Image (cartoon, rainbow, N blue to C red; front, side):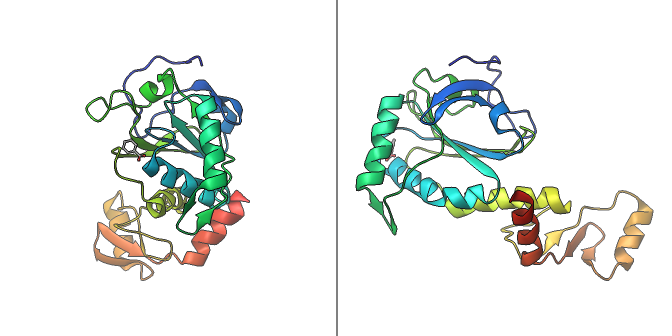
Length: 237
Ligand code: BEZ
């Protein structure tokens, strides 16, 4: 693997995703160039053949089509080599049953990062937690290659997949409807209308009956679930 950029600390929200090439279980990838036009969830695992990671990987594999329906490519990584990845994915498919999931084939790319280069580029190695295993990082990268959200979990805590999907849907809703989303938002809930930028706009806002405002800066409006889903799934399919 060669890196196209030096490591300047961990990538942050709003920055262009750091580029790299890597070998994966589906072949060599050039990131993010190979995925332009798609959302990407780039996530790391501590290690192959460990229980929490196995429960997460089977869940990612089980939900892969749901992410694909949202024009989102999953890409996994751990500091293990391709032989280990391939053996682990085969074991998951052939032997592992978790909740209602079994015989799950993992089709998305899984990066060989034995050199730890990608893990270092993306701040996935957090030495106070472990010097040799990546933490459970999740990077949400938009179709222009911009990092839009990042979540980190420690080694011993499995991720919340409802939340990962909610964040992706939330980011796509923000982009498509020019709104912000309040605490715990899910499709169908009210959305936040951006605060007006002029006194005149504030007056107009207060007179707009389609918008619920407790005060000029706190305005909510309806955004029906079917409208959100129609836009996201129509656009992505
Ligand atoms: C696990 O996936 O089970 C795990 C991996 C590394 C440290 C702790 C737990």
